Length: 256
Image (cartoon, rainbow, N blue to C red; front, side, top):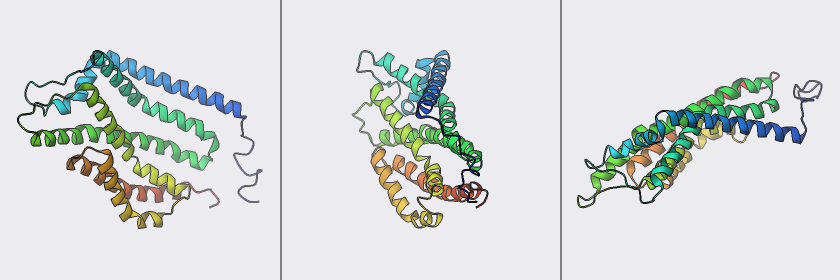
């Protein structure tokens, strides 16, 4: 019998009605939202919304002229912006739970040999996203702030608006967090058969160009942030090719 014979297919008979899928999706979303709420409550207790904003602003404030502070041009910004940061922090804190709910929702449609590496892949995605955010916070933002202040005229006193700074940092966090998922994207594309390992190797030169173009478009117009995004993307692409070979080899069907 073939590997797709219903008598041998371990997924045969596991189909669920469409309504059941909707109910499960609703339950998974509720659990993810509860996890985000718990994360927000925990961060509200310590270090608090104001403490979170001080931590977020520290890489910029450290390179501003002595005594310079960020300003609020909107009346409710001193309250609204810290609350937005609290929500963002709660989501990041709950990200492993959120991704697990996604994995648990799709797991019934996977074969047992595929399930073994899906969870490690989800964990890897979470870790890579956090590494991207940490890389942005500890290296990119301080380096960019120092670069900007070095070229700013002495007649200008920099006093950034807190809402603009929050939006700017949030964008950078998302850009670097998502960009660091390059290995996961490479693995998925190779595993579902859209590209082969050999094609990925041949595309290497084109990817370098794409990485620098993306970095030039999504990052501020300074050399530091552009290089800080493009170079890690190129390195992660190479790591993705190596990981894809391992992943494909260990997720083949038993009869393959």
